[in-house]
Length: 400
Image (cartoon, rainbow, N blue to C red; front, top):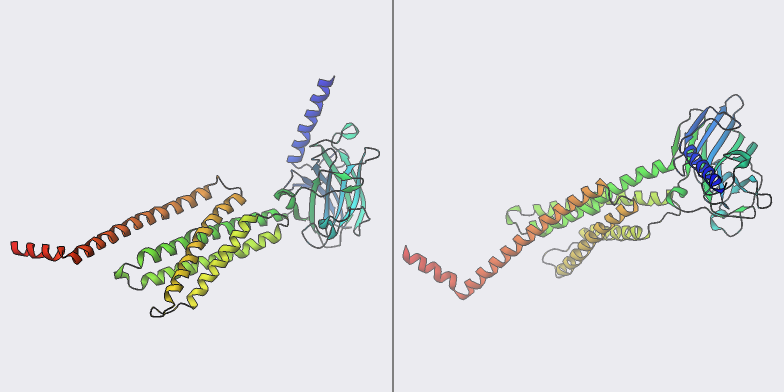
């Protein structure tokens, strides 16, 4: 009997996970017109919009992550975000054990967690609400249990876009849900839905796009262009046939790298604003450091002393130290960025590694060549001082 019960429980769990992975318009009590998978937590919604009276019938499909946890969804009337949202949260009643759904308003004090979150009436026109576990009255709350939260809302006429939020937590203290987990998925459970057309734009899509742009710009600028600019200055300045062209090439590459890096830095700040609670501490600190060093290098061009100035040697030491520090920190931070994007094994990282390896190989070849030329010139200079070159020239002349 126990074995049959465990098998039935496993089957119900498998079905509930499958249902949460694919949206449906049909539930045990209602049928809806449209449905949509939400971008995180294997959640989905189904709804019917009645344009003649601006009424919205909606059901949210979510999953518990703890037998003592909660599942909720809501609408933010003003902006896409948690603060200011009006939500319905379902959990097991601590007295009866039955599923209850209560209204809450997430004001700015919720993030501070100084006081318990208390249920209070919503200031939006909520006509009805209810919640039910998948499986009916025989179902029980467990990790992975599927839940349906129903609501009927009166929307503002001619305003069909709503900002949805949803989440789930591990514990409920009395009738006060505690804070949800703070993984990237949990912090990006936000979407804007047009209930009339069925189109949606999730915040996670915007964040992912910005991440890709941020990564490309910073990998190209701090991770490639700045090292190329340093290589240009180190190895081309001694080529006499180039004249001052090496300097213009060096300055142009560095300025282009700093310009692209600045755009990438600004996008990084925007990503931080869109992802409250998500903080890659080391990546952030290295980014600030390399941007500050890049700014100092750019300003140094404005205060570049003439070659005859006695402070020129100090300026050169400063310029070299800050420049190489910027290159090293920038390259390290590019790899930190790949870690932050969970792209350690991606083709993007492979492409960057190949580009960086090629540049390092060129540097090694040029460095070896520079040392060969230096050693050769040193040897010739030594022989010239000892008079060996002059003597050999005379002897070779006697044979002619």
